[in-house]
Image (cartoon, rainbow, N blue to C red):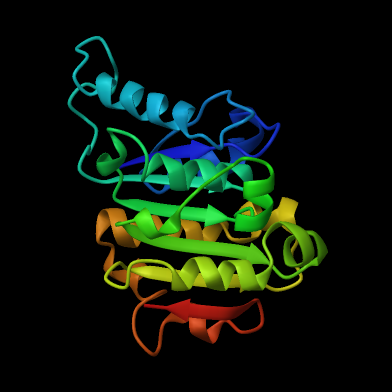
Length: 218
C-alpha cells in the first residue's frame, strides 16, 4: 500500500518524519517531496508517477513489491488542497483510492489565496479532520467550512468528519495520527479491526467524546 503526502505551506517533507515513520510501521510505503507550495497538486501527481514507476524498475528495492491498486494520499493545511486536487484534477487522479486531510484551508480562504479546489469531484473514501482551537476554528478550518465540504461530498462514498478538541492547526497531524493510520488500514488494507473505528452505531470514534466532537459518518 502506498501513501503520498502533500506538504503544508512553506513546509518540506523532512518536517513530517515522525508521521511517515508511523505510517511505515503499519505497512505503508510513504513518499513525500520538497514542494513548499503544494496546492496545485502538480508535485503530488509527479510524486505518484515516480513511486509507481519504481514498481516496474528492476533496479529498485520496490520492484514488483508495491500494491498499486491501493493508494492513499494525505495532507495538512495547504497540502489538503493539494491532496483534493491530486485526486480530482490529473490524468493519474483515478489511481488514488483513499484520502485523508487535516485542517483543510476553508474554501473562502483558499479561493482568496488562489488555492482552488472542488470536493464535489471526489469519488473515493474521504476522512477529514480539524481542531477546535483558535487558528483552525476561527480562521483556517472553521466548522462551517468543514460541514459545507462534508455535505458537498458524493453521497455514495465512505466519508468521515471529526474535530479534535483543544487542538490547533500545527498539532493536528500529531493528535490525529492514530485515526489517520486506522483510516488507511481500513480503506486500503480492509483491516477489520481498523474498520471498527469508523463503522456502525458503535464506531469507536463516536465514543471518544473526551477527545473528538462534531463527528459525522456516512
